Image (cartoon, rainbow, N blue to C red; front, top):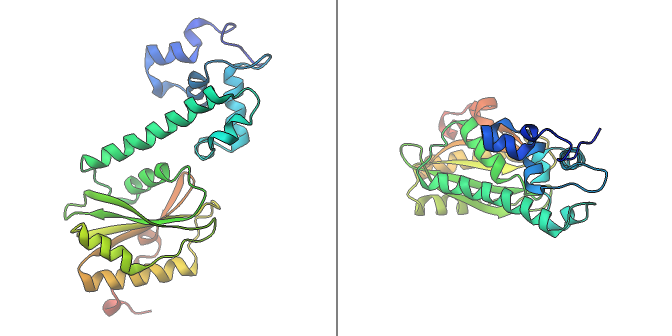
Length: 236
């Protein structure tokens, strides 16, 4: 049964629960309902929020929807769609501001969480890297190439040119798989080897290569540690 806000006990309405206990107690659907504010005839706002999440395939996919896709849905006019897009963009900007404070992203989980959120709305393959200082604090985030749904051409020389300009001690390279598949390709493995070897010559350590797919990520260092040995010490 779809409940409207008026039919719910006041203390159980999402906005009132948020005000009383904070946003962390709300589900994804309830947070979206707060932004939408109202449903449509015969469909409560929480029911509408649940339907949006179900149709999209989860919050990470809602974040990938643009304003045109959202406004094509029944009950989501320009004002509601704009509120959703604006809230998601604010989340992205908060992440960028946190990096300016010298946040450490030196573990796969820390970097993966950041990158999954940053790339949530991206439908094309993006290749980039994080420049790290000697204490593994982020200096800058670089998105080097933007490709198609299946590939993004990469020039290792451009990676190290930018890293050296940042005076980076290390880099964490990353790319996303819009298909949702985390399995590294042969090209992914070959590129990682070339980057590790190039970095060893230039004095810039390649700390990891993360593959991001939706809300998940894979650390190549964790699953293929031999890739991160420089050519001189590698025995294939």
